[in-house]
Amino acid sequence: MSQKRVKSQFIKNLRDKDDVASPFLIKYSAVAVGKNGKPYLNLILIDQSGEVEARLWDAVPELASQAVRDAFVWVEGRCQLFQGRRQIVVKSLQALREDEVEISDYQAKGAVDPEALYEELKRLIGSMKDPHYRALAEAVLIEDADVVDRLKRAPAAKAHHHAYIAGLLEHIVSMTGLLDQVAQHYGETLDRDLLFLGSFFHDIAKLWELEYERAIDYTDEGRLVGHLVMGVELIEKKVQHLNDEFLKSGNGARSLFPDEKKLLVKHLVVAHHGRLEYGSPKTPQTLEAWVLHLVDDLDSKVNAIKNFMMQDQSPGKWTALHKNFGSYFLKPAWAMKAQDE
Image 1: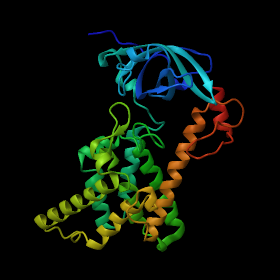
Image 2: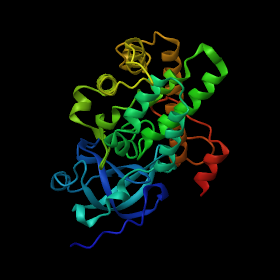
Image 3: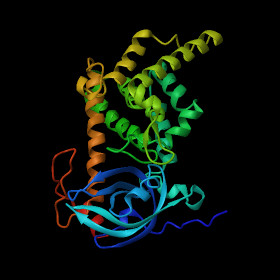
């Protein structure tokens, strides 16, 4: 067995003018052409602490076949700030075999323990009052071993928010906590249990839409079908299973799952992006669907901006330009402290 390349230098700790000598996982690789007409390798390197852009200018034809997505590589070079963002100028690059690295060093991690998150999720499910909605939540999130296993590992997105191990679970628990407070505030105006199911299931099919054993990317099913359609398929399948089990057992604790309730749950999934141009085949047409969309948007944006601030290396109290939001952000005290540390 080959000797492991110890990962002692992590992206979150890289500073301007630091020398770099460490293994990384390639998330993105492409050959581009510079202003001088020469080709260069445009890379995004990742480890468990984050990601960083990299440029390689020498021996591009020879190294392009090694520096491919999902490849482990040993990189030597220098970190520099470019327009407020860190970038590694690569001097040399060598492909590594999988048995030369510890794969867990390259899987992005959140700040919260997945097991603790899952226990909170089960507590929230246990607080539901509607027997049909609660049975559906339990069938998917407690009784389905494959879902439980994936939920403790899956990210919520490829890049924009909660893009790390158990990020989807963190997003679901965070959203459900917010929706619980919203439902309490508005009382009988909103159906709390229906909102909970919207939180649980709006992104549940990302468990299969995304691949996340190494770098996060889309599966074939994710590209061809997508998590909204896949989520509706899952709901249909699980409701049919619940009804089949009810008919077999003759259990009098509840009735067959009502079609109207099933439609309401499905609507939450297909409408949660809010607008047709954002990928929803339907816009929100119930109050719960509008609330779910707004809280989903809020939670994802807060997470995205928080992580951007944590990783920003711009000197002073303002971040670099966030391209997706088209804005600079004033760093709060906790972000300044993280930068100093």
